[in-house]
Image 1 (cartoon, rainbow, N blue to C red):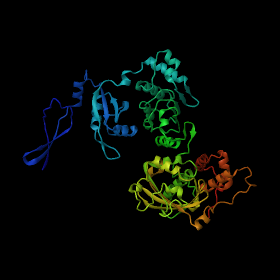
Image 2 (image 1 turned 30 degrees about the horizontal axis):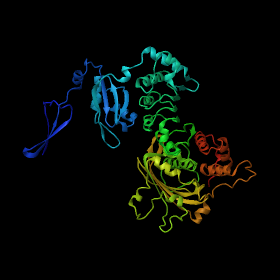
Image 3 (image 1 turned 120 degrees about the vertical axis):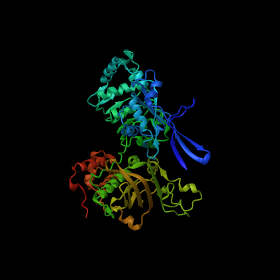
Length: 561
């Protein structure tokens, strides 16, 4: 028999420091299980006993154990939504695995204490919040004086480019105007970074570009406040600082950066190669277009309002037009990037913890002699392997591992007219669909070979009416003679030298590939590529934008019977 009793008065042992904890006892007689709730002190009374003056103006430290694993924006908004008193966190930062910040009002502190164990994370674990009286936070204790703030504002005004909405704060500590007024501004200090961001928020609320290079930054806790204060920033220069871990960049995930500079930081030397480096950074900023001055392939962004360009495609699923448009648009953009030669742009299409597997027909007698040998290493289609670990090892987990795996596969050109799409399962939170078709290898040992494939996607809804892949299974085989003969048969006749006198063989191949993928006629495809200086991915991006705006005439596209 189990009984719960509340003890009205409890003797506090001299060594007991914890409050609001349950004490469990087993009573020998009758083996009764008793849970006793210990009475905790009122927070206001406790504050009065542990601070010098006991006034409501005293400070409190808020601690979230294991808070480092949560996104700051999500964590703070979740707490704020359940807190009965609005609050502004001061000095939010991380200490080992903990997240910490400060508040200055006892009523706010009490309200935050009441939120403890009321928030659940994605794993349905309750998040605890600890509240303790504290000394004045560092950034408040060492807050810049009014005259120092005014001088810093004048200095920053000189460094602001109004026409570009750009602020250049490189080597700010050594600015002559600050040094001459004996102001030692070290941006690693939370009070200095807080003062800088305050001036930015008040004077440059539409800031687009921020240069913080050469400031010896080794952590970004203070800078992360810019996500709420100035979310308009698209270009961020953190080059030539002291950042050692990519984890620091995770603190900035809320910014929709399009350009980022990191060269000259120790973290750049921690990656084995450039693709791995790009994958890790794009994991933090999926919409990134330029890294250290290098153009990246555009991210995958699907939108149901965008007209579908896969006109030759057939669907065997009789679902709603909106749903079919969503899937076909997804396939259009996915394979446009997949065939572009730079598959890094596919990072934005996958969930952080997505899974991918590749399979090919397995010939136990002559695996090495197969024409699919370039796929064999990644394939897990093996019956009764000698080593059981091989059943799991080829699986790719996380979107970074998946994209790295896709990047080592041969370059391809898919025939969109061969696609057969089947949506075979649908709920409000999940969509499962398969696509069958053929593609041609455009590089490697088997260049020119035609392959047949079946690909099964399991996806969930994402922001902006898009899809997010959680599971991707690819099966590749040699095409049959009939499939090989009919591959790319819906293309227009090849342009002769008289119609394309100035194009190289490579450019002609690009025109045909672009025409196949976009559904446009050859002459329009050529014009689109020429206007974008033969940058395949940029041409595709511009095409989608112009199509959305209705600026491409219908005669530009092939007539589909």
